Image (cartoon, rainbow over all chains, first blue to last red; front, side, top):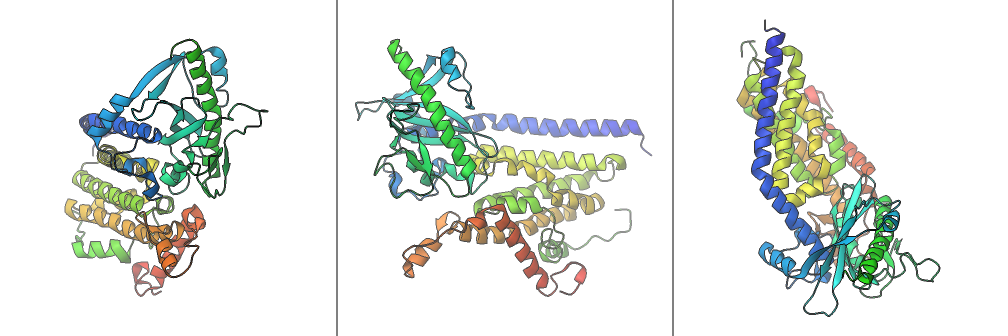
Length: 252
Length: 218
């Protein structure tokens, strides 16, 4: 009968073999996984900046389409991104960090903001990452806003672990389309008569048709949508302050 | 094999796992993922294929080592083997179909805890030869997958009005003269919808002739 020594040796050897196999597989696919992640991030950012592939009209896309399902040409996407999107690291003061109380976004002494310039339009747009709390975990989004922070150009969700078919539907075009041309001018301006962004159960028109400060929530995904709402109202206020402060300092 | 047990025929193994001794409808195993991923057909398809792969190759690997595994650590060895193949599936999905991997999220990793996988390894692969064990694992996965796909088809159709993301109910109703189109059954998308669909499906299957395990009459 085999003794304890054989048991320990067997388990050790099997564990080492399994780990070696998985490590090899992970290493062999690492570049591809990283490349996929980089490509997906670019897709999200360009989607948020409303820079879709040529010939693609968002209005005619099926309602459940996600960003990954749009027919991007990787080479064209990378070139377009390289030519039009510029990353800028802006300083963050202690007072500005305090504005993120209650947010899931954490920043150091500087924060990345992306500027997208469009040769067909005089104005550029700003983009940035936001974080919020969904039902099951953190939601990370990339939002693009107009230069004066008066309206949202678009949003995409880069990380989420919400329920498939419910909260995870924030990835779908139907939900994200309500953020195009969303009025965000009232964020952080209590008492001015302008409203912060709110959500509604049912909207009769999109913000592209009639600009409002409302987006349509997903039935059965109240907590997920609530997390998105809070994220927008908190993080956009922070980024507006950071960008305006940088502009005053001549950094932009 | 050394213990006098006769190897079952491959056709018999396939038939048992697909219907007569189906892991979901008869053994009632793997229920948690049945409820979690069956609100969308494509997610269910990938989940079913992933589980079939993991079960088949885990069974094959365990069977190859069955005569040298110390009995007192056999469960640990089974979990280790299952985990290895499930993580392999996860890595491949992330590398080659990242959009689906993202959509499935944590559910792929949860295959490790699916009782079907461990159940088949313990009940079959640990005492049978490699080829029949591989076949049993594969068809256990297929038996699980086809039940989930039927449930997913109904849940997605009634919950979203779509099949594989393609709108079906709305165009159908509008062409029949219902101007409001299809109103989604949100209940079908949520977990209780999965409970009800699964229960109904088990009831239907068990009511059919020969539907119960062990040849018991319906």
